[in-house]
Image (cartoon, rainbow, N blue to C red):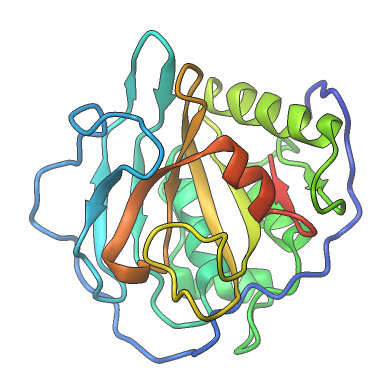
Length: 237
């Protein structure tokens, strides 16, 4: 555990399931070149990787830095069922530091059911259990819209963690009118995804989204949007 601006360890009651669970087979690692984020830029709305919708599909994303940005190397994988966004996002986060367990193993560790992964505190515990130690903490954002202090802490956590090779896992609520690219525009989506990069000038964050809505796997969104997607849930950082 390390020093933080603010710490909160109360579990967030959040259901991380997609609205229409389904069954799927895992796919082998795709024979594609590693993904270069740098080649695409860091503006909000930029799709870095799209078109790989098959459940279980894996892609390697290379780490990189610019004068204002930093992103980590990850082993991305599309979630294998409609309700494994929690295990898939946890797996992606672990992949920046270690060879991660399968989504199925992580689903067991998380206690994930067909109703999803209940709260972000379960993700925090599984991240720490697999990595050893107590780096990750559960951070709540109960206010919607978030307070300035909550926004400041979120940005600080993103920069602090990514600069030390720790991705974040966020539990989000995406209603119609406030959604990442490709989400079903007529539904509210309760979901988990991984934050593994940032750009300080563009004020954007790089998302690895295991759901692959609309064919989007890796994309940039504004920090402002991320800060509105997490409440009233929380994140592991």
